[in-house]
Image (tube, rainbow, N blue to C red):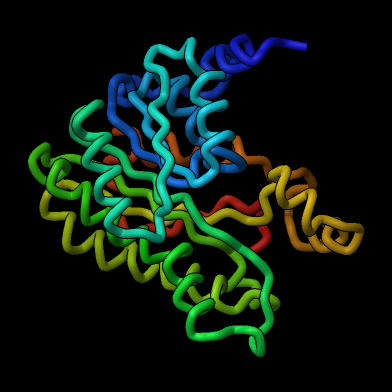
Length: 266
Protein backbone atom coordinates (compact mmCIF):
# COMPACT_ATOMS: atom_id res chain seq x y z
CA UNK A 1 0.00 0.00 0.00
CA UNK A 2 1.38 3.41 -0.92
CA UNK A 3 2.04 6.03 1.71
CA UNK A 4 -0.19 9.16 1.79
CA UNK A 5 2.66 11.18 0.30
CA UNK A 6 3.06 8.76 -2.59
CA UNK A 7 -0.69 8.64 -3.05
CA UNK A 8 -0.75 12.42 -3.44
CA UNK A 9 2.14 12.33 -5.87
CA UNK A 10 0.29 9.76 -7.98
CA UNK A 11 -2.45 12.31 -8.67
CA UNK A 12 0.08 14.35 -10.58
CA UNK A 13 1.58 11.35 -12.39
CA UNK A 14 -1.50 9.64 -13.82
CA UNK A 15 -2.71 9.80 -17.40
CA UNK A 16 -5.27 12.46 -16.52
CA UNK A 17 -4.89 16.04 -17.73
CA UNK A 18 -2.44 18.60 -16.42
CA UNK A 19 -3.46 22.27 -16.50
CA UNK A 20 -0.47 24.64 -16.58
CA UNK A 21 -2.77 27.64 -16.01
CA UNK A 22 -3.59 26.32 -12.52
CA UNK A 23 0.02 26.37 -11.33
CA UNK A 24 0.43 28.96 -8.55
CA UNK A 25 -3.22 30.03 -8.90
CA UNK A 26 -4.94 30.73 -5.55
CA UNK A 27 -7.90 28.40 -5.11
CA UNK A 28 -10.42 28.48 -2.24
CA UNK A 29 -12.55 25.41 -1.52
CA UNK A 30 -15.36 25.37 1.02
CA UNK A 31 -16.18 22.17 2.90
CA UNK A 32 -12.83 20.71 1.91
CA UNK A 33 -11.90 18.44 4.80
CA UNK A 34 -13.69 15.27 3.72
CA UNK A 35 -15.58 13.65 0.85
CA UNK A 36 -15.81 15.45 -2.49
CA UNK A 37 -14.22 18.56 -1.00
CA UNK A 38 -11.12 16.68 0.11
CA UNK A 39 -10.73 15.32 -3.40
CA UNK A 40 -10.93 18.89 -4.75
CA UNK A 41 -8.17 19.92 -2.34
CA UNK A 42 -5.96 16.99 -3.34
CA UNK A 43 -6.41 17.48 -7.07
CA UNK A 44 -5.85 21.23 -7.10
CA UNK A 45 -2.77 20.81 -4.89
CA UNK A 46 -1.42 18.20 -7.31
CA UNK A 47 -1.74 20.78 -10.11
CA UNK A 48 0.58 23.13 -8.21
CA UNK A 49 -2.17 25.55 -7.15
CA UNK A 50 -2.08 27.52 -3.91
CA UNK A 51 -5.02 25.89 -2.14
CA UNK A 52 -6.95 27.13 0.88
CA UNK A 53 -9.93 25.29 2.30
CA UNK A 54 -12.53 25.77 5.01
CA UNK A 55 -14.41 23.26 7.14
CA UNK A 56 -15.98 22.92 10.57
CA UNK A 57 -14.23 19.55 11.02
CA UNK A 58 -10.95 20.81 12.43
CA UNK A 59 -9.39 17.39 12.96
CA UNK A 60 -10.03 16.19 9.41
CA UNK A 61 -8.97 19.53 7.94
CA UNK A 62 -5.66 19.63 9.76
CA UNK A 63 -4.99 15.97 8.94
CA UNK A 64 -5.59 16.58 5.23
CA UNK A 65 -3.35 19.65 5.16
CA UNK A 66 -0.59 17.70 6.91
CA UNK A 67 -0.99 14.74 4.56
CA UNK A 68 -0.54 17.03 1.56
CA UNK A 69 2.42 18.80 3.08
CA UNK A 70 4.74 17.49 0.37
CA UNK A 71 2.76 19.32 -2.32
CA UNK A 72 4.40 22.21 -4.17
CA UNK A 73 2.33 24.46 -1.90
CA UNK A 74 1.03 22.94 1.32
CA UNK A 75 -2.74 23.63 1.47
CA UNK A 76 -3.88 26.21 3.99
CA UNK A 77 -6.68 24.97 6.24
CA UNK A 78 -8.86 27.36 8.24
CA UNK A 79 -11.60 26.14 10.57
CA UNK A 80 -14.75 28.08 9.70
CA UNK A 81 -18.49 27.78 10.20
CA UNK A 82 -19.75 28.88 6.80
CA UNK A 83 -23.22 29.59 8.15
CA UNK A 84 -21.67 32.50 10.08
CA UNK A 85 -21.28 35.09 7.32
CA UNK A 86 -19.02 37.33 9.41
CA UNK A 87 -16.70 34.38 10.11
CA UNK A 88 -16.75 33.43 6.43
CA UNK A 89 -15.80 36.92 5.32
CA UNK A 90 -12.98 37.10 7.87
CA UNK A 91 -11.62 33.71 6.82
CA UNK A 92 -11.60 34.78 3.17
CA UNK A 93 -9.72 37.95 4.12
CA UNK A 94 -7.21 35.79 6.02
CA UNK A 95 -6.67 33.59 2.96
CA UNK A 96 -5.99 36.63 0.78
CA UNK A 97 -3.52 37.97 3.33
CA UNK A 98 -1.53 34.71 3.22
CA UNK A 99 -1.92 33.45 -0.36
CA UNK A 100 -2.83 36.58 -2.30
CA UNK A 101 -5.85 37.35 -4.49
CA UNK A 102 -8.27 34.45 -4.91
CA UNK A 103 -8.62 33.39 -8.53
CA UNK A 104 -10.78 30.27 -8.17
CA UNK A 105 -13.65 29.68 -5.76
CA UNK A 106 -15.19 26.21 -5.37
CA UNK A 107 -18.42 26.53 -3.38
CA UNK A 108 -18.62 22.92 -2.28
CA UNK A 109 -19.94 22.86 1.30
CA UNK A 110 -23.44 21.46 1.88
CA UNK A 111 -25.36 19.08 4.14
CA UNK A 112 -27.86 16.62 2.68
CA UNK A 113 -29.29 15.61 6.05
CA UNK A 114 -32.56 13.74 5.58
CA UNK A 115 -35.73 15.38 6.90
CA UNK A 116 -39.48 15.22 6.37
CA UNK A 117 -41.74 18.14 5.44
CA UNK A 118 -43.58 17.89 8.75
CA UNK A 119 -40.33 18.17 10.71
CA UNK A 120 -39.22 21.48 9.22
CA UNK A 121 -39.37 24.50 11.52
CA UNK A 122 -38.54 28.10 10.71
CA UNK A 123 -35.22 27.61 12.47
CA UNK A 124 -34.31 24.38 10.65
CA UNK A 125 -35.42 25.90 7.34
CA UNK A 126 -33.12 28.89 7.81
CA UNK A 127 -30.29 26.57 8.88
CA UNK A 128 -30.74 24.46 5.75
CA UNK A 129 -30.62 27.52 3.50
CA UNK A 130 -27.55 28.82 5.34
CA UNK A 131 -25.53 25.64 4.91
CA UNK A 132 -26.63 24.76 1.38
CA UNK A 133 -26.71 28.03 -0.57
CA UNK A 134 -26.40 31.27 1.43
CA UNK A 135 -22.65 30.91 1.92
CA UNK A 136 -22.20 30.40 -1.82
CA UNK A 137 -23.49 33.91 -2.48
CA UNK A 138 -21.46 35.58 0.25
CA UNK A 139 -18.27 33.72 -0.66
CA UNK A 140 -18.67 34.85 -4.28
CA UNK A 141 -19.31 38.40 -3.09
CA UNK A 142 -16.13 38.31 -0.98
CA UNK A 143 -13.84 37.13 -3.79
CA UNK A 144 -15.28 39.07 -6.72
CA UNK A 145 -13.23 42.24 -6.19
CA UNK A 146 -9.99 40.25 -6.51
CA UNK A 147 -11.31 38.69 -9.70
CA UNK A 148 -12.55 42.02 -11.07
CA UNK A 149 -9.12 43.57 -10.51
CA UNK A 150 -7.47 40.69 -12.34
CA UNK A 151 -10.22 40.65 -14.99
CA UNK A 152 -10.19 36.90 -14.60
CA UNK A 153 -11.66 34.28 -12.31
CA UNK A 154 -13.68 31.10 -12.03
CA UNK A 155 -16.46 30.42 -9.53
CA UNK A 156 -17.73 26.85 -9.34
CA UNK A 157 -20.96 26.28 -7.41
CA UNK A 158 -21.84 22.72 -6.44
CA UNK A 159 -25.38 21.71 -7.32
CA UNK A 160 -27.08 18.30 -7.27
CA UNK A 161 -29.21 16.09 -9.50
CA UNK A 162 -31.53 15.48 -6.52
CA UNK A 163 -34.11 18.03 -7.65
CA UNK A 164 -33.90 16.85 -11.26
CA UNK A 165 -34.82 13.34 -10.10
CA UNK A 166 -37.65 14.69 -7.90
CA UNK A 167 -36.07 13.10 -4.84
CA UNK A 168 -38.05 13.19 -1.62
CA UNK A 169 -36.93 12.97 1.99
CA UNK A 170 -34.98 16.24 2.20
CA UNK A 171 -37.08 19.06 0.73
CA UNK A 172 -35.07 22.04 2.01
CA UNK A 173 -31.88 20.54 0.59
CA UNK A 174 -33.52 19.84 -2.78
CA UNK A 175 -34.93 23.36 -2.92
CA UNK A 176 -31.54 24.86 -2.07
CA UNK A 177 -29.74 22.85 -4.70
CA UNK A 178 -32.19 23.81 -7.43
CA UNK A 179 -31.62 27.45 -6.47
CA UNK A 180 -27.87 27.09 -6.99
CA UNK A 181 -28.39 27.07 -10.72
CA UNK A 182 -30.32 30.34 -10.56
CA UNK A 183 -27.53 31.84 -8.46
CA UNK A 184 -24.96 30.71 -11.02
CA UNK A 185 -26.82 32.26 -13.94
CA UNK A 186 -27.36 35.58 -12.18
CA UNK A 187 -23.73 35.86 -11.09
CA UNK A 188 -22.51 34.83 -14.54
CA UNK A 189 -24.37 37.72 -16.15
CA UNK A 190 -23.27 40.35 -13.63
CA UNK A 191 -19.64 39.22 -13.44
CA UNK A 192 -19.09 38.25 -17.05
CA UNK A 193 -18.22 41.85 -17.96
CA UNK A 194 -15.07 41.34 -15.89
CA UNK A 195 -14.19 38.02 -17.54
CA UNK A 196 -15.27 36.12 -14.43
CA UNK A 197 -16.84 32.77 -15.23
CA UNK A 198 -19.48 31.12 -13.03
CA UNK A 199 -20.64 27.54 -13.55
CA UNK A 200 -22.57 24.90 -11.64
CA UNK A 201 -20.93 21.51 -11.19
CA UNK A 202 -23.80 19.07 -10.69
CA UNK A 203 -22.93 15.70 -9.09
CA UNK A 204 -24.94 12.53 -9.14
CA UNK A 205 -24.77 10.06 -6.25
CA UNK A 206 -21.09 10.21 -5.36
CA UNK A 207 -19.69 7.31 -3.36
CA UNK A 208 -18.10 9.17 -0.46
CA UNK A 209 -17.47 7.39 2.82
CA UNK A 210 -20.37 9.31 4.35
CA UNK A 211 -22.83 8.28 1.66
CA UNK A 212 -21.80 4.65 1.96
CA UNK A 213 -22.01 4.72 5.73
CA UNK A 214 -25.36 6.48 6.09
CA UNK A 215 -27.49 5.81 3.05
CA UNK A 216 -26.13 3.31 0.54
CA UNK A 217 -27.98 0.00 0.84
CA UNK A 218 -29.13 -2.71 -1.56
CA UNK A 219 -32.06 -0.55 -2.71
CA UNK A 220 -29.69 2.35 -3.36
CA UNK A 221 -27.38 0.14 -5.39
CA UNK A 222 -30.37 -1.03 -7.44
CA UNK A 223 -31.39 2.58 -8.10
CA UNK A 224 -27.89 3.50 -9.23
CA UNK A 225 -27.67 0.53 -11.56
CA UNK A 226 -31.04 1.33 -13.11
CA UNK A 227 -30.57 5.11 -13.20
CA UNK A 228 -27.03 5.55 -14.46
CA UNK A 229 -26.14 4.85 -18.07
CA UNK A 230 -22.60 3.99 -17.00
CA UNK A 231 -22.31 0.87 -14.85
CA UNK A 232 -19.65 2.12 -12.46
CA UNK A 233 -19.42 3.92 -9.14
CA UNK A 234 -19.27 7.72 -9.32
CA UNK A 235 -16.28 8.76 -7.22
CA UNK A 236 -15.15 12.10 -5.74
CA UNK A 237 -12.21 12.19 -8.15
CA UNK A 238 -14.63 12.24 -11.08
CA UNK A 239 -16.01 15.54 -9.79
CA UNK A 240 -12.56 16.90 -8.96
CA UNK A 241 -11.25 16.36 -12.48
CA UNK A 242 -14.18 18.31 -13.92
CA UNK A 243 -13.60 21.10 -11.39
CA UNK A 244 -10.00 21.35 -12.59
CA UNK A 245 -11.20 21.88 -16.15
CA UNK A 246 -13.77 24.51 -15.12
CA UNK A 247 -11.12 26.37 -13.12
CA UNK A 248 -8.45 26.25 -15.81
CA UNK A 249 -8.08 28.54 -18.80
CA UNK A 250 -9.01 25.60 -21.04
CA UNK A 251 -12.68 26.38 -20.29
CA UNK A 252 -12.27 30.14 -20.80
CA UNK A 253 -15.51 30.55 -22.80
CA UNK A 254 -17.70 28.44 -20.54
CA UNK A 255 -19.97 30.30 -18.14
CA UNK A 256 -23.56 30.10 -16.85
CA UNK A 257 -23.48 26.36 -17.55
CA UNK A 258 -24.75 23.34 -15.62
CA UNK A 259 -22.08 20.67 -15.94
CA UNK A 260 -23.59 17.36 -14.87
CA UNK A 261 -21.32 14.51 -13.76
CA UNK A 262 -23.65 11.67 -12.79
CA UNK A 263 -22.93 8.68 -14.98
CA UNK A 264 -25.85 9.63 -17.22
CA UNK A 265 -28.63 9.49 -14.62
CA UNK A 266 -30.42 12.85 -14.77
